[in-house]
Image (cartoon, rainbow, N blue to C red; front, side, top):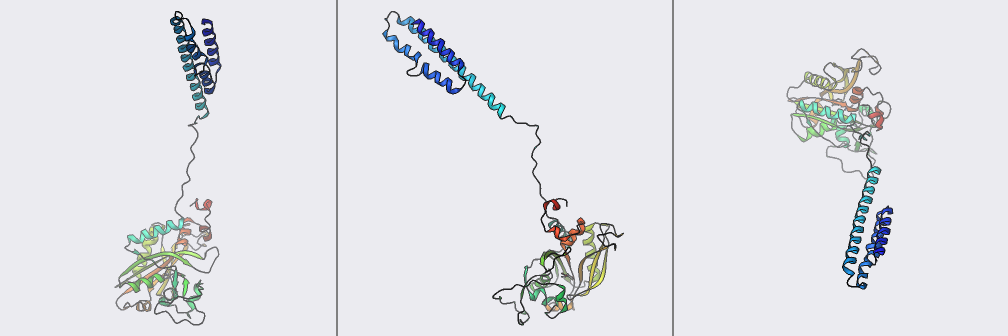
Length: 356
Ligand code: DAH
Protein backbone atom coordinates (compact mmCIF):
# COMPACT_ATOMS: atom_id res chain seq x y z
CA UNK A 1 0.00 0.00 0.00
CA UNK A 2 2.85 2.36 0.81
CA UNK A 3 4.22 1.84 -2.65
CA UNK A 4 0.84 2.53 -4.13
CA UNK A 5 0.56 5.83 -2.17
CA UNK A 6 3.99 6.96 -3.28
CA UNK A 7 3.40 5.96 -6.88
CA UNK A 8 0.11 7.86 -7.06
CA UNK A 9 1.62 10.94 -5.41
CA UNK A 10 4.60 10.96 -7.81
CA UNK A 11 2.31 10.47 -10.78
CA UNK A 12 -0.02 13.26 -9.57
CA UNK A 13 2.93 15.60 -8.95
CA UNK A 14 4.25 15.04 -12.48
CA UNK A 15 0.84 15.60 -13.97
CA UNK A 16 0.37 18.86 -12.05
CA UNK A 17 3.82 20.04 -13.02
CA UNK A 18 3.08 19.52 -16.70
CA UNK A 19 -0.38 21.14 -16.53
CA UNK A 20 -0.19 24.43 -18.38
CA UNK A 21 -3.81 25.64 -18.23
CA UNK A 22 -6.52 26.01 -15.61
CA UNK A 23 -8.46 23.24 -17.36
CA UNK A 24 -5.54 20.81 -17.12
CA UNK A 25 -5.02 21.58 -13.42
CA UNK A 26 -8.72 21.04 -12.83
CA UNK A 27 -8.57 17.71 -14.71
CA UNK A 28 -5.72 16.58 -12.44
CA UNK A 29 -7.70 17.62 -9.35
CA UNK A 30 -10.68 15.55 -10.47
CA UNK A 31 -8.46 12.61 -11.39
CA UNK A 32 -6.79 12.41 -7.95
CA UNK A 33 -9.08 14.19 -5.47
CA UNK A 34 -12.53 13.93 -7.09
CA UNK A 35 -15.29 11.60 -5.82
CA UNK A 36 -13.85 8.69 -7.72
CA UNK A 37 -10.30 10.09 -7.82
CA UNK A 38 -7.41 7.68 -7.24
CA UNK A 39 -6.10 9.36 -4.06
CA UNK A 40 -9.64 9.56 -2.65
CA UNK A 41 -10.00 5.83 -3.38
CA UNK A 42 -7.09 5.10 -1.03
CA UNK A 43 -9.06 6.56 1.83
CA UNK A 44 -12.08 4.47 0.96
CA UNK A 45 -9.81 1.37 0.81
CA UNK A 46 -8.79 1.81 4.46
CA UNK A 47 -11.74 -0.29 5.59
CA UNK A 48 -10.23 -3.36 3.99
CA UNK A 49 -7.05 -3.14 6.08
CA UNK A 50 -6.44 -5.01 9.27
CA UNK A 51 -7.40 -2.80 12.23
CA UNK A 52 -3.81 -2.73 13.46
CA UNK A 53 -2.52 -1.26 10.19
CA UNK A 54 -5.17 1.45 9.92
CA UNK A 55 -3.71 4.24 12.08
CA UNK A 56 -0.30 4.25 10.38
CA UNK A 57 -1.72 3.86 6.89
CA UNK A 58 -4.41 6.46 7.60
CA UNK A 59 -1.71 8.93 8.53
CA UNK A 60 0.24 8.24 5.35
CA UNK A 61 -2.84 8.63 3.16
CA UNK A 62 -3.77 11.90 4.87
CA UNK A 63 -0.27 13.23 4.38
CA UNK A 64 -0.33 12.25 0.72
CA UNK A 65 -3.69 13.96 0.23
CA UNK A 66 -2.65 17.19 1.90
CA UNK A 67 0.64 17.18 -0.01
CA UNK A 68 -1.23 16.86 -3.28
CA UNK A 69 -3.68 19.57 -2.25
CA UNK A 70 -0.88 22.00 -1.52
CA UNK A 71 0.85 21.19 -4.81
CA UNK A 72 -2.47 21.74 -6.54
CA UNK A 73 -2.86 25.15 -4.91
CA UNK A 74 0.67 26.13 -5.92
CA UNK A 75 0.04 25.11 -9.51
CA UNK A 76 -3.32 26.96 -9.64
CA UNK A 77 -1.62 30.05 -8.33
CA UNK A 78 1.24 29.76 -10.82
CA UNK A 79 -1.10 29.36 -13.77
CA UNK A 80 -3.30 32.25 -12.61
CA UNK A 81 -0.21 34.42 -12.35
CA UNK A 82 0.95 33.41 -15.84
CA UNK A 83 -2.49 34.25 -17.29
CA UNK A 84 -2.42 37.65 -15.59
CA UNK A 85 1.05 38.42 -16.97
CA UNK A 86 -0.10 37.38 -20.45
CA UNK A 87 -3.15 39.67 -20.22
CA UNK A 88 -1.06 42.58 -18.97
CA UNK A 89 1.40 42.16 -21.80
CA UNK A 90 -1.36 41.96 -24.39
CA UNK A 91 -3.37 44.93 -23.11
CA UNK A 92 -0.38 47.17 -22.64
CA UNK A 93 -1.19 50.89 -23.08
CA UNK A 94 1.34 53.19 -24.65
CA UNK A 95 0.85 56.28 -22.54
CA UNK A 96 3.38 58.18 -24.64
CA UNK A 97 1.14 58.06 -27.76
CA UNK A 98 -0.20 61.52 -28.67
CA UNK A 99 -3.93 61.89 -27.92
CA UNK A 100 -6.61 62.17 -30.58
CA UNK A 101 -7.63 65.80 -30.47
CA UNK A 102 -11.28 66.76 -30.88
CA UNK A 103 -12.03 69.16 -33.72
CA UNK A 104 -13.42 72.40 -32.37
CA UNK A 105 -15.98 74.28 -34.43
CA UNK A 106 -16.72 77.99 -34.30
CA UNK A 107 -19.60 80.19 -35.21
CA UNK A 108 -20.18 80.95 -38.88
CA UNK A 109 -18.59 84.29 -39.90
CA UNK A 110 -22.04 85.65 -40.79
CA UNK A 111 -23.39 84.67 -37.35
CA UNK A 112 -20.34 86.25 -35.72
CA UNK A 113 -20.86 89.50 -37.62
CA UNK A 114 -24.56 89.45 -36.74
CA UNK A 115 -23.86 88.89 -33.03
CA UNK A 116 -21.37 91.76 -33.06
CA UNK A 117 -23.83 94.11 -34.78
CA UNK A 118 -26.62 93.29 -32.31
CA UNK A 119 -24.24 93.86 -29.39
CA UNK A 120 -23.00 97.19 -30.75
CA UNK A 121 -26.54 98.51 -31.24
CA UNK A 122 -27.69 97.18 -27.86
CA UNK A 123 -24.99 99.39 -26.32
CA UNK A 124 -26.40 102.34 -28.30
CA UNK A 125 -29.85 101.70 -26.78
CA UNK A 126 -31.57 99.81 -29.64
CA UNK A 127 -33.95 96.86 -29.16
CA UNK A 128 -34.10 93.86 -31.47
CA UNK A 129 -37.36 93.61 -33.47
CA UNK A 130 -38.53 90.71 -35.59
CA UNK A 131 -40.65 90.18 -38.70
CA UNK A 132 -41.69 87.27 -40.94
CA UNK A 133 -39.65 86.12 -43.94
CA UNK A 134 -42.85 85.44 -45.89
CA UNK A 135 -44.21 88.96 -46.12
CA UNK A 136 -47.17 90.84 -47.49
CA UNK A 137 -46.75 93.22 -50.40
CA UNK A 138 -48.33 95.79 -48.04
CA UNK A 139 -45.35 95.87 -45.65
CA UNK A 140 -42.55 94.99 -48.05
CA UNK A 141 -43.52 97.68 -50.61
CA UNK A 142 -46.75 99.62 -50.18
CA UNK A 143 -46.15 101.04 -46.68
CA UNK A 144 -42.61 101.98 -47.70
CA UNK A 145 -43.78 104.18 -50.55
CA UNK A 146 -43.28 101.59 -53.29
CA UNK A 147 -46.69 100.99 -54.99
CA UNK A 148 -46.89 98.28 -57.65
CA UNK A 149 -46.39 100.70 -60.55
CA UNK A 150 -43.35 102.31 -58.91
CA UNK A 151 -40.11 101.93 -60.90
CA UNK A 152 -38.22 101.18 -57.64
CA UNK A 153 -39.78 97.70 -57.68
CA UNK A 154 -37.34 96.86 -60.43
CA UNK A 155 -34.48 97.46 -57.97
CA UNK A 156 -35.51 94.29 -56.15
CA UNK A 157 -36.08 91.05 -58.03
CA UNK A 158 -38.86 89.58 -55.94
CA UNK A 159 -39.80 85.94 -55.33
CA UNK A 160 -43.61 85.84 -55.15
CA UNK A 161 -45.46 82.94 -53.56
CA UNK A 162 -47.52 81.10 -56.13
CA UNK A 163 -50.28 79.67 -53.94
CA UNK A 164 -53.38 77.89 -55.28
CA UNK A 165 -55.53 79.77 -52.79
CA UNK A 166 -54.23 83.14 -51.66
CA UNK A 167 -54.97 83.96 -48.01
CA UNK A 168 -56.85 87.17 -47.24
CA UNK A 169 -54.33 90.07 -47.29
CA UNK A 170 -54.23 92.42 -44.28
CA UNK A 171 -56.57 95.44 -44.32
CA UNK A 172 -55.18 98.37 -46.27
CA UNK A 173 -53.54 96.13 -48.89
CA UNK A 174 -53.75 97.42 -52.43
CA UNK A 175 -56.54 95.86 -54.53
CA UNK A 176 -55.24 92.88 -56.51
CA UNK A 177 -55.15 93.35 -60.25
CA UNK A 178 -55.06 90.33 -62.55
CA UNK A 179 -52.35 87.84 -61.57
CA UNK A 180 -50.72 90.18 -59.03
CA UNK A 181 -49.67 88.27 -55.92
CA UNK A 182 -49.79 89.57 -52.36
CA UNK A 183 -47.40 87.20 -50.58
CA UNK A 184 -43.66 87.22 -51.24
CA UNK A 185 -40.29 86.41 -49.68
CA UNK A 186 -39.24 89.71 -48.15
CA UNK A 187 -36.67 91.45 -50.31
CA UNK A 188 -35.27 93.50 -47.43
CA UNK A 189 -35.68 93.93 -43.66
CA UNK A 190 -37.34 97.32 -44.14
CA UNK A 191 -40.90 95.88 -43.74
CA UNK A 192 -40.07 95.45 -40.03
CA UNK A 193 -39.96 99.28 -39.90
CA UNK A 194 -43.59 99.50 -41.03
CA UNK A 195 -44.72 96.62 -38.79
CA UNK A 196 -43.04 98.10 -35.71
CA UNK A 197 -44.40 101.62 -36.22
CA UNK A 198 -47.93 100.29 -36.86
CA UNK A 199 -47.74 98.35 -33.59
CA UNK A 200 -46.50 101.09 -31.25
CA UNK A 201 -46.42 104.87 -30.82
CA UNK A 202 -43.10 106.79 -31.08
CA UNK A 203 -40.36 106.85 -29.86
CA UNK A 204 -39.00 103.82 -31.74
CA UNK A 205 -35.42 102.59 -31.51
CA UNK A 206 -35.00 99.18 -33.10
CA UNK A 207 -32.73 97.00 -35.13
CA UNK A 208 -34.13 94.07 -37.11
CA UNK A 209 -31.68 91.43 -38.29
CA UNK A 210 -32.74 88.57 -40.55
CA UNK A 211 -32.78 86.70 -43.85
CA UNK A 212 -33.93 88.37 -47.07
CA UNK A 213 -34.41 86.98 -50.58
CA UNK A 214 -33.86 88.21 -54.11
CA UNK A 215 -33.89 86.46 -57.44
CA UNK A 216 -30.22 87.14 -58.08
CA UNK A 217 -26.98 85.12 -58.08
CA UNK A 218 -23.39 86.05 -58.98
CA UNK A 219 -20.14 86.63 -57.10
CA UNK A 220 -21.57 89.47 -55.03
CA UNK A 221 -25.20 88.28 -54.85
CA UNK A 222 -26.85 85.16 -53.42
CA UNK A 223 -30.62 84.46 -53.58
CA UNK A 224 -30.70 84.53 -49.77
CA UNK A 225 -28.65 86.95 -47.73
CA UNK A 226 -28.79 88.74 -44.38
CA UNK A 227 -29.61 92.32 -43.53
CA UNK A 228 -29.96 94.41 -40.42
CA UNK A 229 -32.46 97.22 -40.44
CA UNK A 230 -32.08 100.15 -38.09
CA UNK A 231 -34.87 102.58 -37.29
CA UNK A 232 -34.93 105.48 -34.86
CA UNK A 233 -37.99 107.76 -34.66
CA UNK A 234 -38.30 110.49 -32.07
CA UNK A 235 -38.73 114.25 -31.73
CA UNK A 236 -35.93 116.35 -33.14
CA UNK A 237 -33.81 113.78 -35.01
CA UNK A 238 -31.71 115.02 -37.92
CA UNK A 239 -29.07 113.81 -40.39
CA UNK A 240 -26.51 114.56 -37.67
CA UNK A 241 -27.96 111.75 -35.54
CA UNK A 242 -27.85 109.38 -38.50
CA UNK A 243 -24.24 110.26 -39.15
CA UNK A 244 -23.21 109.92 -35.51
CA UNK A 245 -24.87 106.52 -35.17
CA UNK A 246 -23.34 105.23 -38.40
CA UNK A 247 -19.91 106.45 -37.42
CA UNK A 248 -20.12 104.85 -33.97
CA UNK A 249 -21.25 101.60 -35.55
CA UNK A 250 -18.52 101.56 -38.23
CA UNK A 251 -15.79 102.27 -35.67
CA UNK A 252 -17.07 99.56 -33.30
CA UNK A 253 -17.33 97.00 -36.10
CA UNK A 254 -14.26 97.71 -38.25
CA UNK A 255 -11.95 99.45 -35.77
CA UNK A 256 -11.46 102.98 -34.48
CA UNK A 257 -9.38 104.19 -37.43
CA UNK A 258 -12.17 103.62 -39.97
CA UNK A 259 -13.74 106.65 -41.67
CA UNK A 260 -17.26 106.98 -43.08
CA UNK A 261 -18.70 109.12 -45.85
CA UNK A 262 -22.23 109.71 -47.11
CA UNK A 263 -23.11 109.94 -50.80
CA UNK A 264 -26.51 111.19 -52.00
CA UNK A 265 -28.73 108.36 -53.17
CA UNK A 266 -32.37 107.44 -53.65
CA UNK A 267 -34.73 105.16 -51.72
CA UNK A 268 -38.52 105.65 -51.88
CA UNK A 269 -38.88 105.39 -48.09
CA UNK A 270 -36.23 107.95 -47.13
CA UNK A 271 -35.84 111.60 -47.97
CA UNK A 272 -33.07 112.63 -48.20
CA UNK A 273 -31.31 109.30 -48.82
CA UNK A 274 -27.64 108.49 -48.64
CA UNK A 275 -25.38 105.60 -49.45
CA UNK A 276 -22.67 105.06 -46.84
CA UNK A 277 -19.07 104.12 -47.58
CA UNK A 278 -16.39 103.11 -45.10
CA UNK A 279 -12.67 103.53 -45.71
CA UNK A 280 -11.25 100.25 -47.01
CA UNK A 281 -10.09 98.07 -44.11
CA UNK A 282 -7.73 96.09 -46.35
CA UNK A 283 -5.59 99.00 -47.60
CA UNK A 284 -6.46 101.69 -45.06
CA UNK A 285 -7.86 103.90 -47.84
CA UNK A 286 -4.85 103.82 -50.17
CA UNK A 287 -6.64 101.77 -52.84
CA UNK A 288 -6.53 98.02 -53.50
CA UNK A 289 -8.27 95.18 -55.34
CA UNK A 290 -11.03 94.89 -52.69
CA UNK A 291 -12.05 98.56 -52.94
CA UNK A 292 -11.37 98.68 -56.70
CA UNK A 293 -8.60 101.26 -56.06
CA UNK A 294 -11.08 103.83 -54.69
CA UNK A 295 -10.10 103.51 -51.01
CA UNK A 296 -13.81 103.28 -50.11
CA UNK A 297 -16.28 100.42 -49.69
CA UNK A 298 -20.02 100.86 -50.07
CA UNK A 299 -21.72 99.19 -47.12
CA UNK A 300 -25.27 100.41 -46.64
CA UNK A 301 -28.29 102.48 -47.63
CA UNK A 302 -29.73 105.05 -45.28
CA UNK A 303 -31.70 108.24 -44.95
CA UNK A 304 -34.26 110.30 -43.03
CA UNK A 305 -37.58 108.42 -42.91
CA UNK A 306 -39.85 109.85 -45.61
CA UNK A 307 -42.67 111.90 -43.96
CA UNK A 308 -45.16 110.03 -46.15
CA UNK A 309 -44.01 106.75 -44.56
CA UNK A 310 -44.46 108.24 -41.07
CA UNK A 311 -47.95 109.51 -41.97
CA UNK A 312 -48.78 106.10 -43.53
CA UNK A 313 -48.30 104.37 -40.18
CA UNK A 314 -50.28 107.02 -38.28
CA UNK A 315 -47.34 109.07 -36.94
CA UNK A 316 -47.40 112.87 -37.15
CA UNK A 317 -44.43 113.93 -39.35
CA UNK A 318 -44.75 117.46 -37.95
CA UNK A 319 -43.94 116.14 -34.47
CA UNK A 320 -41.48 113.31 -35.01
CA UNK A 321 -38.70 112.60 -37.45
CA UNK A 322 -36.58 109.50 -37.93
CA UNK A 323 -33.55 108.05 -39.57
CA UNK A 324 -33.12 104.52 -40.88
CA UNK A 325 -30.61 102.34 -42.58
CA UNK A 326 -30.29 98.83 -43.92
CA UNK A 327 -27.00 96.97 -44.10
CA UNK A 328 -26.01 93.65 -45.66
CA UNK A 329 -24.46 91.50 -42.94
CA UNK A 330 -22.81 89.08 -45.37
CA UNK A 331 -21.14 91.99 -47.11
CA UNK A 332 -19.83 93.30 -43.79
CA UNK A 333 -18.46 89.83 -42.99
CA UNK A 334 -16.83 89.67 -46.44
CA UNK A 335 -15.15 93.03 -45.97
CA UNK A 336 -14.02 92.17 -42.47
CA UNK A 337 -12.39 88.90 -43.57
CA UNK A 338 -11.31 90.04 -47.06
CA UNK A 339 -13.44 87.41 -48.87
CA UNK A 340 -14.07 88.21 -52.53
CA UNK A 341 -16.80 85.70 -53.43
CA UNK A 342 -19.98 86.06 -51.39
CA UNK A 343 -21.15 82.58 -52.41
CA UNK A 344 -18.24 80.96 -50.55
CA UNK A 345 -19.94 81.98 -47.29
CA UNK A 346 -22.89 79.71 -48.05
CA UNK A 347 -21.22 76.66 -49.59
CA UNK A 348 -20.43 75.33 -46.09
CA UNK A 349 -17.00 74.13 -47.13
CA UNK A 350 -15.32 73.58 -43.76
CA UNK A 351 -11.82 73.94 -45.31
CA UNK A 352 -12.77 77.49 -46.29
CA UNK A 353 -14.70 78.44 -43.12
CA UNK A 354 -11.89 77.11 -40.90
CA UNK A 355 -9.55 79.81 -42.19
CA UNK A 356 -11.74 82.60 -40.86
N1 DAH B 1 -33.97 98.31 -47.80
C1 DAH B 1 -32.89 98.83 -48.63
C2 DAH B 1 -32.35 97.72 -49.51
O1 DAH B 1 -32.48 96.59 -49.17
C3 DAH B 1 -31.77 99.36 -47.79
C4 DAH B 1 -32.17 100.56 -47.03
C5 DAH B 1 -31.94 101.83 -47.54
C6 DAH B 1 -32.76 100.45 -45.78
C7 DAH B 1 -32.29 102.97 -46.85
C8 DAH B 1 -33.12 101.60 -45.07
C9 DAH B 1 -32.86 102.86 -45.62
O2 DAH B 1 -33.68 101.53 -43.88
O3 DAH B 1 -33.22 103.95 -44.92
O4 DAH B 1 -31.78 97.99 -50.52
